[in-house]
Image 1 (tube, protein in one colour):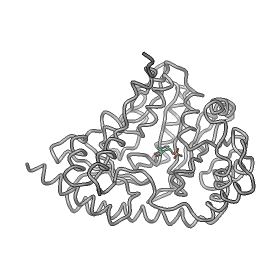
Image 2 (cartoon, rainbow, N blue to C red; image 1 turned 45 degrees about the vertical axis):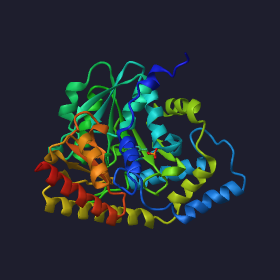
Image 3 (cartoon, helix red, strand yellow; image 1 turned 60 degrees about the vertical axis):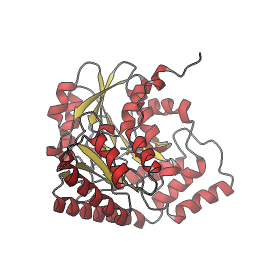
Image 4 (cartoon, rainbow, N blue to C red; image 1 turned 90 degrees about the horizontal axis):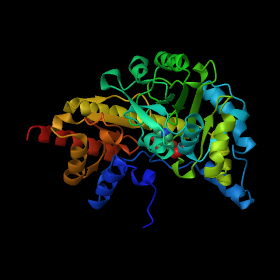
Length: 385
Ligand SMILES: Cc1ncc(COP(=O)(O)O)c(C=O)c1O
């Protein structure tokens, strides 16, 4: 009988998807599991794509993106991230997800290791499974605010390790890595001659102070940084991301991307130019909305005595549900079935994160607060059962 490949058959299902499907089955659940802004793409961005398509800008473009977009992105990363990179080191990707995939393929061979955190965005691990690269987990702890610590990573480095993957601001943790910790992590990578893959797709969503990019702290060309239009401009469905590559890797990632994507959707690249060069109020507006929601949710959890890690960026919050007496997966299933609230169990992000669930602050304030009240009530009620 014909069968799918072993690599695909053995891929685990996404824990996020499972809760989402349960939530659909119960009808009008409150969705705190989704990582998608509840804002619309700005009208001038939509208009730019419309114009491009109507003008016939609908053909293949260069693999690495249209020159006009790479130029404005070179200015963007200099001005907003402090990275000095000429346009020829910017590679436009169909969402950051494909950028990360191409970079992993470009830095690591089959059978080697890449260090990823527990918890982290589940797609990293799935990509590595497909590419035959071993994900080796380094733990993040709630006591450290989920900030990675070089001393805890070092014992996991072997002669098979090729890269350390970082994500700041982080999904699912909401943690931003402070400059000092980033410097130590890059120093660690230097001392073992490793690549650093720095996923910064939430770079513009920070609360107390701007997030720090790993790019400017890279003295010798080992850091790859990933960015995206998805979250910053509420453009998740447009599929445009970009990465800044060190000089020794640009050709490699472009080569890795060629067979899987050829290029990014042409009108969407024009939309991306409009997003970067047009008014930026939506970026500040969304940041402010997520910040307010973060504070409202924190106040509510404090009042209910539920432990959590206060996010400093992105739009997620990890709440500790161990007071319910259930592990995160059992808790998430029961919460959606009995209280109509969908959250993601921490185990979807790593095996050591079973005390936590991830809430998304991308949901509008009213349903968000209703969902968090129900979650707190459930923890406090079930904990006393
Ligand atoms: C940490 C992280 N990296 C990358 C991505 C992918 O972003 P894009 O929509 O640009 O592919 C996501 C999307 O949720 C994410 O959370």
